[in-house]
Structures are given as C-alpha cells and as structure tokens.
Length: 302
Length: 286
Image (cartoon, rainbow over all chains, first blue to last red; front, side):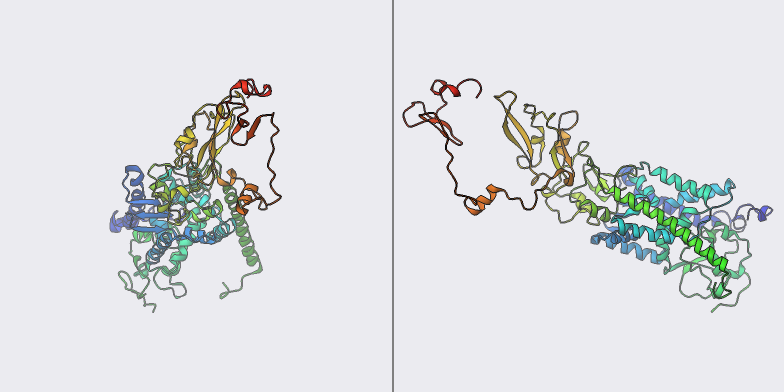
C-alpha cells in the first residue's frame, strides 16, 4: 500500500476522519484502549493503593471476593499435566469460557491482553519508521505452538509454558515484580518491530490460538451490513491485525454471509472505525440477512 | 485448493517443506521448554513453598501462578518466582532467613489457592510440612560450642516438640553439659523461625526441603528396643543380667551409680565421699 497510495491520504482512516469526524473514526480504538488499561488498572490499584477490587492476575483472579475468573487455557495445561484443579478454578474457567463464547474468543487479545499494547505499539512504530520486509512464518504456526505447549505440559508434568509466556509474564510482572521478564517482553517487541509484522500476536502466540478456537463459535461478530458500499479503499485491510479474515466476508467469497466468521478476528472494531462508508458494524452471528445502509443495495445472499 | 486445480508437485513439495520446517521449529522450542521445566523442578534449597504445597512434581502442574496466596499472606512473606530465579516462573515461595512463615491458625494462603496446589485438606498449621529444620553446622552452632544460646529452641512455635535441647557431656571441658538443639521431624513444620532467629552470621540451623533433609531407613530395618517392647520381651535369646566386676564392698547399678554394699561402707548412696572411693576412681578425671 505504501508505494501505490503515495498520492492519496497517507494514513489509513483519513477518509473516515474526514467523513465521520476524528472521534467517530477512533471510537472503538479508544474504547479498546480504555478496556485494556482499565482492566490493568483494576488489578494495579490493589498493590499500589491497597484497594483490593481484584486480586490475583490474568491466570486467576477473584473480584470483590465474589467473582472467580480463571484462564481456561492455563487450566487446560494443568489438566494436560494430570492435575485436576479445585472447584473455584474450574468455575472461574467456565465463566471465562462462557464470556468469550459471547463476545468472541480473541476479544481477549484485543480488549484484555496487556501484550497487545506492546505489539500494537511495535506495529505503530514499524509503520512510522517505514520498516519493510517481514520474515515469513505462516499464521497457523500458532496452532502448532498451542499443541506444543499442551504436549510440553503433559510430558514435563508441569505448566511449562508459564515459564515463558509473555502474556502472564507482563501482567504478573506489573503486579508482582518484573525481574528479568522485561527481557522476554523486549524480545517480543523487537521481533514485532524489526523481524515480523504482527509477528507474535498474529502468528505465534498460543494463548491467542486457544482463544481463537473459542471464537469459532462465539456470538458477537463484526458484520458487514453495507458491504455493497465498499469502495475498495483497503483501509480496513491496512489496520486489521488479521487481514485474512476480512476478504471472504467483504467479497462474498464462496457465498460467505456478510459477517466475519473467521476464528481469528479479534473483534477489535478498528475496521468499523476506519471505514468511511460504514460497511462494518458489530452484531450477532444470528440472522444473516443484509440490511443495506448506504450505497447500492446488493441482492440478499440468502 | 483441490476444487480449482490440483496443486503442482512443486507446490506440494513446498507445502510439505514449509510444514516440516514449522513443525521442527516449534518442536525444538517445545523440547527446550520441556527441559527447562524439568530443571525447574529441582527446587533450590533456600526456597520454601507455602504450607500445604503438594510435592514439587505435582505442585508445578497444579499451581497456576496466580499469586492469590501471596496476596492473602498477612505477613507478606511470599514471593512469586521471577524468570531469572531457578524455579518455575511465577510460583510462590519464601526464604526463611529473610521472613519465616508465621504459621497463621486459619492458614489464609491455603484458603486462597483456587486450584488446590496448596492442599485444602490441611486444616491444622502444626501439621504442615513446608520443609524440615536441620542443624547443619555443628562447628558454629553456639550450643555446640557450649553456650546456652537456645534461641532456635525458644522461638520454635512447636517448642519442646519440634526442637528439644538434649544434654550431652562436654568432652572439651570434661565438666559441663552441652544442650544440643535436636529437631524432631515428626513435629517440625519447616516454618523457618529458627533459621531466621539463629544469631550467627550465617545460620547454623536451616530449613531444607524434606527430600533433602530427611533420610530413610531401609525397609527391612527393625529397631530392637521397639520390637522388644512390642513383643513384651527379648526376641533373640534369654536376657543375661549384666555383671559389673567391682571391688569388694562396692556395687554399681545402671542408672543409680556406685554404692557400698549393705552397711560395710557407711556413707552409702549420698554424694560419695572421695575417701570412701577406691584409688582408681579418685581424682579429677571423673
């Protein structure tokens, strides 16, 4: 896009800013950052100000001594290592699973995970610095990583991935002391900045891979109620961390209904922000009829 | 891809090569991770797990590194291991010499554990086995040197059970008693108060993980005196009364000491007058 669009607005989303105003063109991005930082802050006010709204960390937390939340992926590794956790952890994992079945599995990545702040920053910097070229690792590598972590848990008899997992390392580090975890996080940052575009979150992270499996069935979806209005500006592809998920729905490939059903859509909503034609909107996966908003109405795919 | 046109042999080869490369790369990472995790099981001896912790092999599978125990410890003794520390990253431990376990009666750390990595069946903190105190250095322990330091004995929350002071004669002076702090594994909880309180520059008594601190008799060993008690008498041969060959007019009884025979030597059981003793038993060497 860099070479072709030299003459047109240099940043994706400029058209949307002109059409909708800056705030509307950044609505979901702002909400998402608020969610990420807000969740982090909820955890941090405990150790910082002894204000214990939430105890624990992303692996398990207890909110107001009432709501247990556990990471089902960590629980799965514990089970793979042949340990059955007590009830509280299982209830917590069930609640989290149900929640992500509603809001989209990888919503965890874009709305909660603190590493996303880091890798988004790396990507932002990569674009600003004009760093081109990217190592090639296929996106499904993350599923191999996921399988590997479960095998490692089973073979070593311990939750082995937790020794390296940058997600829990960052979150736990901020709450309980970072130690040398900063080196692991710096490695992830530099990898995303210099070696590979969307390298960690988009290709390798097994946590994201796990949540994407949850997201296969999830209810909340990005829908394309006005996909006929698309003017092929490519802004959505430019901002999307998983651009391969857009094409089938946008171009109705193989009769795909106008909603993004790919498991790796993170429901970040950035495509909704940057589209000047309002092609995208959040909705449920049910009732896939098209309600054209603007532009030429297309024949309903049903 | 099989709908449209059959992939060429070259494409298929490329696909297989890519997949193999990916599998090998991830596999290699997995191997490293597995080995790393195995190594981390050899818990460093200075790191003591919280009360109720499962044996290390199970603990590293059950603990989800959430830090709830750390948060609910009212004395803030617990830490989560950082990546550079030689144990599973994110697992809880304390260092007795820095801050020992205060042995709360309600055991809040165990209650806080959501997975049971800290075993919820532990209800009595006195039954916990975080480790075992070992008097590792007989050369620097002040009681071994003949002083009445006794600090480890005094601070022990299970005083007179987990640590007792066992008298021994002081061979160096020949006239004093050493009060040897002796740890009894049956009662020691491994809280580490003794290690924390030991006044020497480096603690002479240390809490070690059980697997390091405790020996084990071979299964075929029997303690003769225990078996004898159980059987109500000697099991091997009729017991022979031991005879002491004493000078005429003297008697020796185990546990009672020397005495004169009835009436012959007047000051019988009272502190033996040196004059009444035979020459061989007189002098300062007793």
